[in-house]
Amino acid sequence: MIAGIVGKPNTGKSTFFNSVTLQNVPMANYPFTTVSPNFGVGYVKVECVCKSLGLEDNPINSTCINGSRFIPVKLVDIAGLVRGASEGRGLGNRFLDDLRQADVLIHIVDASGSTDEEGRQVAVGSHDPEIDISLVEDEFDKWLLEIVKKDWGRTSRRADGNLAKFVEAMRGRLSGLSIKSSHILQALERAGLRGDKPVSWKDDDLEKFIHELRKISKPSIVAANKADLPSAQEIIRKLRSNGRKIIPTASEAELLLRRAATMGLIEYITGAKEFKIVNNSALSDQQRAALMLVQERVLRVWNTTGTQEAINSSFLELLDQIAVYPVEDETRFSDKKGNVLPDAFLLRQGGTAKDLAHLIHSDLGDSFLYAIDVKSGMRLGSDHVLQDKDIIKIVATARKG
Ligand SMILES: Nc1nc2c(ncn2[C@@H]2O[C@H](COP(=O)(O)OP(=O)(O)OP(=O)(O)O)[C@@H](O)[C@H]2O)c(=O)[nH]1
Ligand SMILES: [Mg+2]
Image (cartoon, rainbow, N blue to C red; front, side, top):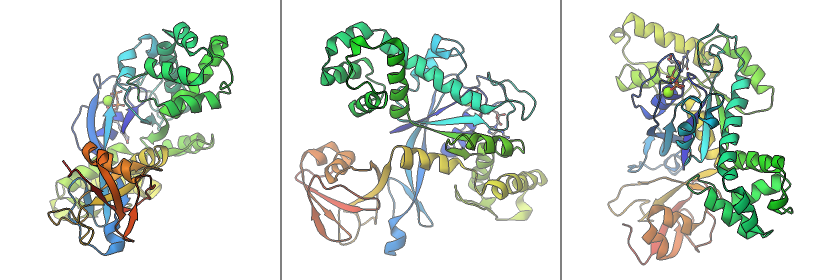
């Protein structure tokens, strides 16, 4: 699963990306700083099972800090999107192509209202980001519509009123876009088109179907960024009044805290409500002032910088994933080498013991015999649906790797 970081130019997409991946991609106060996509790894933060079991763990594929497990997830930061992008304006279609593989979108808006539709600087508080949300979504819809329209005559005829054939034809047309059959079926349902023959659809039926398909296959959360600026408070209140889930973020503040923590100047765990200065005399006046500003304008107002909530919400809520912990030695909760709770995997809600085996290694999935719920000692069949925080031993004829 991969999250795409999207939005109009100059909203702080790359700053968000750097703050959660600790990379150093260019960021600047003008539009189109980012031209080609940046790929990186961020982390979902969950309460680790080591805590309730009273175990000292030795994580391998993830990290555990003070009982919080950080599980890696893929992120892509892309160029800003402007009106007309679906027809090639700005960086146009290329931008949208970079989003093909995204399963979920983190839509970064400038909640301080200090950039116009194209990302140019304007008076603070003068631009309403609600406009930007619709703009990006509309361009996405138009882009998807163009892809489907290219071959619509053939796709709709080939379906011949047969649902399975239609789904198959659509999957072919949309291959590489991370769109599943279940997404297509759900979109048909929501658009109220399941019973109608696609050849008889009107233009607006196709548009409705595409709109639903985009919402289902690329669900998104809105990160109201630059929340540290005072004008953001009123704008975020207004954005929230429209019933949409809005996560206030201060990416620049998160970046500052993460870098200060890496330098050993402060103690800070991402997503925390506070930080602690390690050695006050090691800080320059400028560094101290910047940290105080984060304290006053971000943590006091919003509790956290919001970046961790944005990632967690994308993977745990929108993609409905749970964390499970495979082990090889069920008596020691460890791998063969004795590393306790070495791995944590994100699995979709409803995923089975066999799905987990496949996720670990395809051979393990193919030769799956049964699994053991390590906490209860119960034997589980391949179809057993796993729960969040399950610790599982997979028994298979093939060894891992
Ligand atoms: N006040 C404030 N400024 C921010 C925040 N995040 C980013 N910025 C500033 O916003 C400007 C744009 O940041 P970028 O990260 O380059 O924005 P972008 O969306 O990637 O821009 P493009 O790649 O050009 O589309 C920079 O001057 C950042 O310092 C934030 O949380 N608060
Ligand atoms: Mg950028």
